[in-house]
Every structure is written in C-alpha cells, then in structure tokens.
Length: 131
Length: 203
Image (tube, rainbow over all chains, first blue to last red):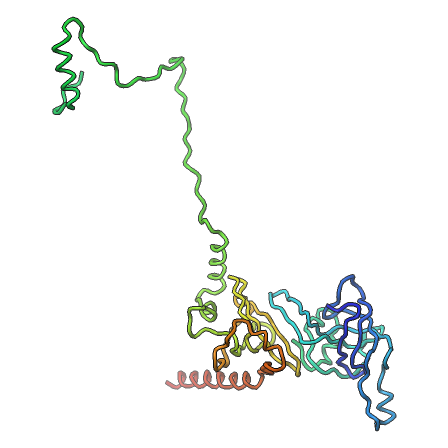
C-alpha cells in the first residue's frame, strides 16, 4: 500500500537509494506491486570519494530529483487468485523514464511476479529472483 | 345384538343384574355407541380429499459443516493433507518446522512455518523464507488443488512454546534463509527415491 509520503528502497543501479512517493498514477487508491508512481529521490547511493568520472556520469539521478517508478515489493502484501498471499519485508521500487524503460541496468533483490501480468517484463527479466 | 363375549366386564354384570331385578315395565336399550354424522345431501357423490405425502425434511441440520466435509473429501480423498496438520497426529507438522511446498505450476516455496490457520476448507499455513537477503512470507492454502505436495524438511529441535511464531520476524529470532537445508533435503529425498526405484527394478 504505497501512497503519498511512503518511503521505498530503490533497488536498481540508477544512483538512488531511498525514494519518497508523491503520487500514485492511474488509480485513486494506494499502489501495489506493478503500479506506477511518482517519486522524489531522498537519498543517493554513496558514490565514494575516489570514483572515476565515468562512474560518476553513470549515476542518473541525484537527491531531490523527481522521477517515475514501478513498485516491485510491498510490506503490506497482496493476495493471488489461487488463494495464496505474499508479503515482503520492505517496500521497493525501480526507477523508470516516461516511456516505461528502467533507468538502471541492473537490479538487486527479489521482486513480485505480478510485474509480468502488469506488462513490466523488462524489469522482471532484469531481476535476479521473483516470487 | 352380537353374541355374548366370553368375559363381560364387571361393571356391565352389575348393571345388568340391577336393571333386570328393578325394572319390569320397560326394556333398557343402551344408546348406540357409534354415531355417524349424516351427510347433508346423500345423493351428491362423496368428496375425495387428497392426502399428500409429507415433504422431505432437511438432509442435515448443519449445512455449513456438511459442505466443509464434502469439499475436504473432494480435495483430499486420502486424508493425507488433513493428517499432516491434524492436532491429534503426533507426527504432524508444527509451527517452527521447515516446510517445502511443491506446486503444480510454478516454483516451489519453502520456509519456516510460522502459523497454521485452521478454517475448514480454507486452512492455510504461513511460511517465512529469505530470498536475496530479504524476508518473504507466503500464505498457502493447504487443500488447494494447485499444491502438489507439502513436505516436512526439518523439525524444530524443541517444541515452540507458542502457536504463532511472529517473534521470528525480529532480527534476534529470525531463522534466515532455508535454501541450504531445503536443497540438502531435496537432494537426499531424490537420491532415496532413485535408490528405491533402482532396487525395485533390479529385484
């Protein structure tokens, strides 16, 4: 149940670590796995002092940037049609651009399988594991 | 008058004796014992009043439990699934054990059993695992036809002193990933099956 002021972990390598949701897109209720949201970057991944210029250029977003994102894990959990119910230990998202392509190139961590049903197969293919 | 019965009741004997000794002028005619109601118009045909058989009563006084039993019988005819979580069975799966669930379509899921929610046909179990260093919990319906098998991988050494082990969500008591234990068990069970199949084919 991601809504305004919800904090999410950003699990891709776009440069963001922690983001805050400001808007849920497409529906008038809290977001769940597979929904698009608008986020503000709250914390950046530590770049390290001795990082090369190329590596610094690869970071796509900075603190205070506004971006679109897709929710991939929720602590609230959700039910499936077969009667099972799944819940993660944190809220997580993946940053995307306006066309729906992920900003990062790699994901870390498990994601929910609902991404396939909601047509986020690109993100699902990047994920190391899904449940 | 009908023939005299072999044994008159005593009262009639008394009555007949007194009446016969006392009265001489009139003969006593007892009133008719049965009185038929006269039909208002005897020429009309008799009415035949239809008598219907009583409607069938309810099959059961508790339809919900009857339905639950019927559904469980349909989904678990051998009773093995119910036996796995039965309170009476000493070999049942208990909270704290590691459970491996195989599904007919999709990946298997394993984890520490935190909770058995007994609700008749909707009986479900809560399994907690760690995937990519993140805790994941899943409720699975025990009688679901999607579930191929529920297997006990490892029992808790000591019986858990609670029925609901939600304290295991805290880092101090969190079991962690069960992948290693489960993969060992899967390997062993597969080897055992293969071994028994080989023996059967050899003999």
